[in-house]
Amino acid sequence: MNTVPNDTIIALATSSGVGAIAVIRLSGDKAIEIANTHFKSKFGNKDLTKVKTHTIHLGNIVENERVIDEVLVSVFKNPNSYTGENVVEISCHGSVYIQQEILQLFIKNGVRNANPGEFTLRAFLNGKMDLSQAEAVADLISSNSAASHQVALQQMRGGFSTEIEKLRQQLLNFASLIELELDFAEEDVEFADRTEFNKLIAQISEVLKRLIDSFSLGNVLKNGIPVAIVGEPNVGKSTLLNALLNEEKAIVSHIAGTTRDAIEDELIIDGVAYRFIDTAGIRNTEDFVENIGIQKTFENIEKAQLVLHLIDSLKIATLNTAIEELTSKYPSKKILTIVNKADLLTEEQISILKTQYSDLIVLSAKQKTGIHELTTTLTQLANKGALSNNETIVSNSRHFEALNNAYNAIKEVQKGIDLQISTDLFAIDIRQALFHLGEITGEVTTEDLLGNIFANFCIGK
Image 1 (cartoon, helix red, strand yellow):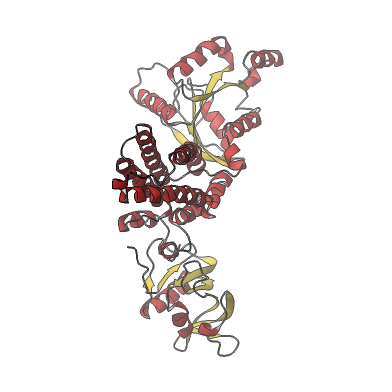
Image 2 (tube, one colour; image 1 turned 135 degrees about the vertical axis):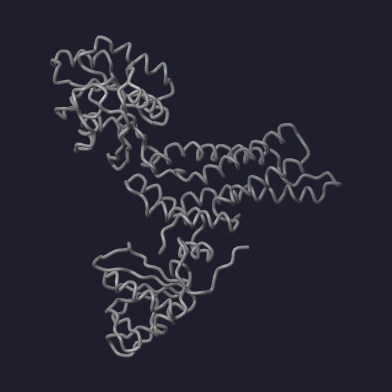
């Protein structure tokens, strides 16, 4: 059983280094009492242990008679705080020297340095949030786009937890009746209505499948959509990357085979992060090093969620062949065909191309024309419908694994019902499904699991 530590912890809650201000956070039963011994109010002999919760006080942090800094102290009394314990936040000037002086002052007086994520761990152990919400805190801090921010915020607010808890409770109610049947096995009675139970299992399977399927979207929204830019040498792949990023990231040259290794950078378009990968040009070559780069190109295509296939406008006669070669090799990939160097085509030629190929994008990376059409298409392909509709989206790989395990257990329950096997056999699968659903919200935890999760947090959160 996981128990809540009763000592007082301290950490810098803002980024390390020099800044305008820094925030130092304490949490624990004696946090306010300890802070009070080193706080001298600007307005009389104020006692922090007697002030109202959620109040801010101006004064000095002192060591004996020595003033370390003028600060603002925020007081949060249990249970109405982030951790559920007494919490004090000291806003001091952002000097590294001042930060360290305050930290060391409290450490010398019995306060312990917090471990990574220990404030959020205490919030979880004190029932202020469940485990999936706690993990969303880390995702929220690391979010670098509007989409990843929205996914993390929705999870932190409990949307995912509510859905999982509802499923678990429904299954738990029926599981209780199944267990009751096992207690009266000799009397051959059924407490759980099998028709209703079948409906519930089908409903749970459907919801679990939807959540599992959402991971493909959630994962790329969280980590960025990988996009491989591919094509023959000198087709303008590096020029396109530079045009998208609006900087000279990749070397551009008229010499074929300039790019021999993948060049990667991230760009946020309409709130979604894209990881663009400029790859080596695909061609037959005797150059050993270039061949290694071309092999990496194929590897990047395999990993990419989307492929931008560039074709030189001077080679539009071979357009069909080029499209068929790539699509036949990667039939399951979403491939967007782009004709580059549109500045070398007439308006009539461009019009004919777009008539023949409805999904074709024609642009000039060098002249930066047609880039807006490309970014608009990328936004459409991002499939943000579920995000816009505020649906639950799974972005955590641990949750994805637990959902898969729960789904497999539920399918075994369904199989057992269909085959009319003994109740005690499919009762085992029901317990397994409940166990895996409980893993997500933290109703089922181990010290190792919590250690692995919170070790990835920053210190101070």
